[in-house]
Length: 115
Image (tube, rainbow, N blue to C red; front, side):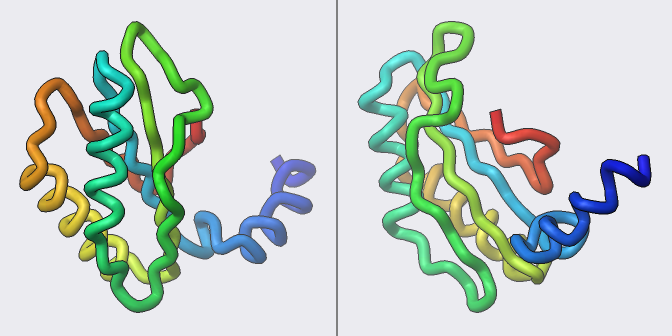
């Protein structure tokens, strides 16, 4: 345990990863790649990130197709839980407003992995 933490914790502190910061991963998925990409882009393009939050644009997920569904993901990072909470609320509102048929959105706070 200690052999893992010794090099890992300084790297996490430098990057603002948990436990020193917070990350949220958004994953859009659906059977039609163009719809998934458009939904992800629409959600994130209309977003006004709260102060203290950094948002990375959507892109094909590391595993772009999984179980017959296309996947796009975006990350947001902040030291503030409140800023990320506001960000998640805004992304969900944008997703509901766009209402793209067949596209789902998953939100993962402090994800264990990014696959």
